[in-house]
View (cartoon, rainbow, N blue to C red):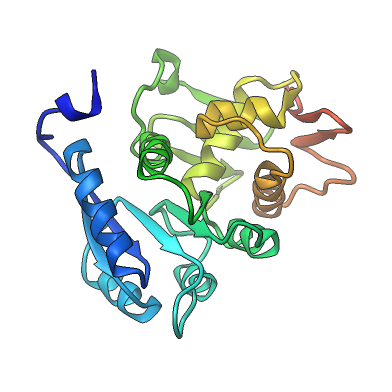
Length: 241
């Protein structure tokens, strides 16, 4: 089906774009609407936080370069435990900010120069994960690895009696590793599975999300109970009885 032939959706994905470029916001709003994304705009970090406090959104598009309260500060105020997924827009060469943004809980990122079509593809991947679409039948089963319990149907995970507060990307990363416990998964395989995109030459997003997962699992990378680093290859969830 071509982009122009898509019919009006029955339910919009409520989307907040926080970006000070009003022309860019308007262009993106008009492009995304036929694909089911109802876009609200905020042109400062402060205005974005105010809208998030007043309304419910399914996904956030967040530019890091904002006047006053920048995107990283917005992420910090949102906290890493919020469930609304965030797509960061970054300057082409700002890898340190990109990594910090991922550490603060952003789900994915794109350069600000990305086309609307590319932004749409990333938004679709993010919202599919967060809304639990396209689940396989075995998603209804609970996965138990040691004292870690993962319920794919409710998208919750516990270590013992402690509920883990995970972003949508972190949950799907944990689920992907748990489903293939005992098998090595490369970074590229994980990105393709979770974000529907290949790993770039200098893409460290999986490593950053793994570090965050380990902190929440209290899993020591030097003596891991759950996630093992396979040097020069990827990661593996330990198989436990």
